[in-house]
Length: 165
Image (tube, rainbow, N blue to C red; front, side):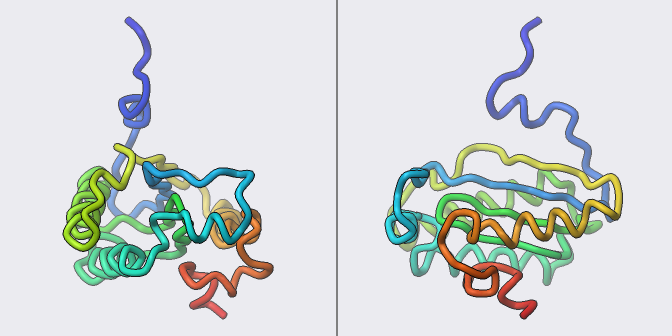
């Protein structure tokens, strides 16, 4: 039997456990290119366009308010989203991410006419030790600095680093 490929491979070995910390990455179908300038990445990044970023952030707020997740860190980049959250008791990781992707995709379509904004699936990592927490928060919040979009983490408007400062 051949190993799973693509989206199916992401699901292999996935465990959903209420109360566990998860580092999740969800990618947009429209990708920015590494060789683009910072301005081109911002202009060409579908996820950070006015209206679209609001829908995504509102969906994250809703998930928190309804006890699906407790969001610890996040960074919305031009073509992907990094999340670190504690899974609530309300739904499995798969259901939370499906609800998030389905809702945001539908709302973005209503506002912009863009279809299939997200790649199917998501990458997840269940944290196994508390000592991973600080490293993952730093990785998430330094993402716009590494991409050359800002000089300091707190300057990126769509990140938990901005709220923490």
